[in-house]
Image (cartoon, helix red, strand yellow):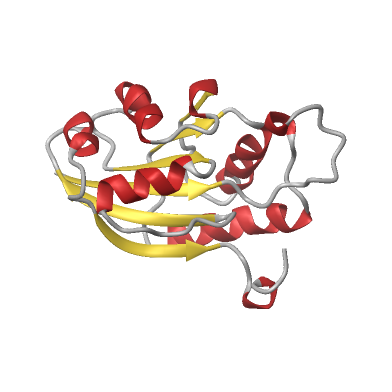
Length: 170
């Protein structure tokens, strides 16, 4: 079965908030416009996820909520503290939650863990700035088998939530 994994970094967050911790930082205005833009681009490419594994940080929750508003179907999500700043091993630990019938899933989280996931699965170094998603494909019977198949995933596309005029400034 063809397995498709979207590895996405949360949309741009605010460093100027009153958040009590990094975990509680909200999205900023740019992030609130980026998340639905990425969701629309995923839908246009027919890559809407059937299931999402996400960090439970405020900025990933907000990113997902804004994306969900764009998608035609309700997408089940698991928000896990264990995925906050997690990498490949966090994904493997959470993979048992993924429905086997799902062909397209999303991992929504943070760097540097997400870049590690992309590198280990595809053998490609792809810098993931905020609101960027890497689309990966693999043939495998089960999600655990697919996710344990290092360096066998094929990068299909990279989606950037930023508009071109936003590329030069943070």
